[in-house]
Length: 457
Image (tube, rainbow, N blue to C red; front, side):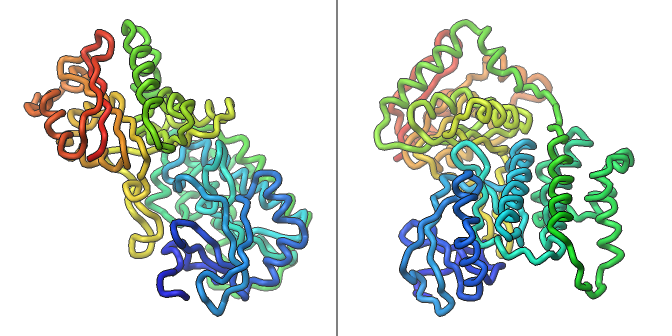
């Protein structure tokens, strides 16, 4: 390879090819060892069918060996994904839609005599308002053998969905604990006994776990698995997943904006200020709304033409936002579950396979509305640390300061001593001044809250 080009740290498992970056552009190399399968994928029309249906990220072929590798066969330039996210940052219905998408991709592949050799949510990303499959090298010829990715699908998609469905709890972080999926035997033990009375759950988790453990270490015999059996398997998985429902755990923040509407003209004034300030900013295209709740201000930013990441630590709010955005077919707001006090770490081999949230967070603008007091007083994070965190913005920060006298801050202080002597608007301006210059400062209606437009130094 050229000395300045190497495979992405996450792209080492598959000998068929790899992802690499050159001059800020992401490419995929197809290796000679995968020539027959890739040619079949293109020539049968499988790629065109998937891309036309919006199931697979489209690509352009580049007639150049950019890596200088002897293994080179093709260079692909896929459509860029604005923000890479991971399954442990998705809400229930995001993971559910990713699972159903994977099965739709599999069905289309089978129509063209192919099958998926991988069935992991890491091959799916959010793109222009929906989930899309991104691994062009996951397709191989179907040879009437059992689906090689069946167990992977059950452990990485089905198990977490079933556990959340039955426990009525948002267990999305289990996918961070078990990065390669929840082992079948663990899922079987964690699921309630009544789950065994669901035929599809029994087959795909409980029986699957029992058979897998019994046959561990045995030499696989050649097994004929007809196309009809494969279609039946896909139908069974689809029926099961379609029946699963998100855990409903209304939180303190579920009705935040509805309650805010009752506070005079506070919310309307804040909306107008945010809208006007964003409209005045030049040369920005991306924003991150951190502490987005149900995405009210994310939508305002998107209406100004920005691509917006809407992150919140409440899984219920994020799932509700995702479903609302899906219904209204809004394409520029990407929902994400993120605890700002403990954002996703870097994971995988050498902690380099998957970047941390901080490493990925590089927007032109950050919105931090009614969130600082939750971090400073609710989570005991000093203002200096909060300011450093928000300095991840490339250019601007629109941030709201809520004073200690505010009823919401008093609620946070109700059952704890007030040890926050350095939490004041003067402290805020002084500390944030380390990283930012104040461009605008305005009191929001008669709320006592102050909105700031800050420019990064």
